[in-house]
Image (cartoon, rainbow, N blue to C red; front, side):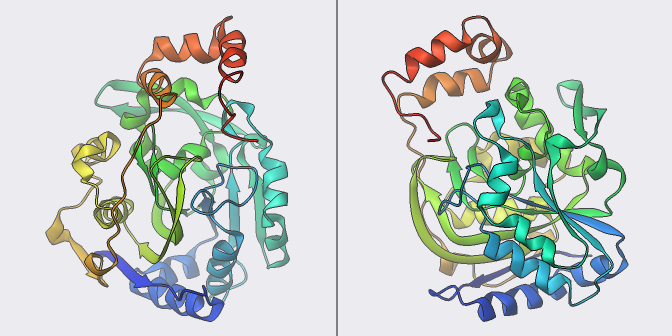
Length: 327
């Protein structure tokens, strides 16, 4: 099927009826209707990188519920799993966050199950990358049982990766709460993880975005964007343009392009007006971002800052002079 990116502007009041109309039309345009009708089970991955809902930071329960309701119009038998892995560096409980944000309430719909992926079995696989083979544990359920998966990010800048969209959102699928030990390989494995976990579709919760800094601290901006696609690569490529950022400046997208996961312009069908919705985003790293950024790219520094005997002392000293990112 053609790689289609469906783009619309949301009502200012975030009308449920208008959201429903966009979801319904986009599901048909990108071919999700047929895939879902024939699927035994699917997985939906919201971005829940904070212990409670925060504008521009987390995917809203309202958005995911809207998607579930539209999919249920096709059948009630396909199992819909919705979930996220435990918070990185044990910063908060994902089980509690899923409850606080209201996601557990979605189990009122037929055959919907909310998951903390870190509480389920995982399996080690080896990813073939341009840096060689890389072994990593991924949820067995997503590897073996679901027919396909859907990424539902929010549009935001990210101090470590430049942007956070459909591909970056999948980092939370890693069940290990110390997944940061794999950061030095992030750019080379994230799009491979997308393929391994069968992420085929993406929907943007674009009511709000996050500018200036991210993924948690930044300036929320009201965007009123709705975007859906049957290509993870096309989705990230087009939305990056809508954010006024060149995808060539984003290393994990450059690597995804080298792997063949980012389509060329002539392979993408755009249904909508991305230029008319364009909003300039600018990443402004603060002083504390730079040592973290260096560690993000270095296996040795990651070990020193987070896993060595000095890690607790370093973090206690740091939080004497700066605010914790999650409070």
